[in-house]
Length: 135
Length: 67
Image (tube, rainbow over all chains, first blue to last red; front, side, top):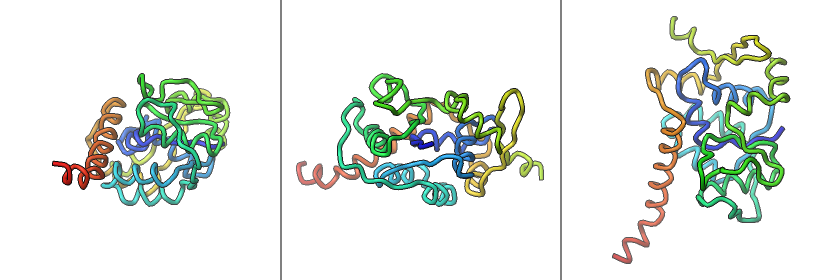
């Protein structure tokens, strides 16, 4: 399974709460249950937003598979969000996980075959439930 | 010791509770953020603020030369 994590999801993962769904997603990823992808722009944003968590950033950097899309997406009104969409489309991701589904951001249910889901929706997917049950 | 016990995150699968131990990096982040809360909206706003700061830094040579 191929997944793109919006930066706000990783930011939410850093907040202590045993019910933290973003943290569950990260732990699944770290255990190699699915692949996460990024490009230099999205990785750069992770670094800027999570600059005060260097150890977590190291883990993210080790987990993210880099890609270099040869096209520019313009489907999203809020321009910076297009960098994540470019990665998702380039690697034919299954899911783009975000909490930013407001108008002008990731406001569609899908972009081509990439499904846009919140962390909560992602964890409810049957294939994800199977991965969790397998841990 | 009490805090170490909290270094797990829970997931419910088919009505069953599953506890996942946090990675060292995320455990360190949780320790650092102890007592902090952030809603999804606040997280989005936080990221947008960082994006704006980055954009302004990138634009600063242009802005400086045109002021």
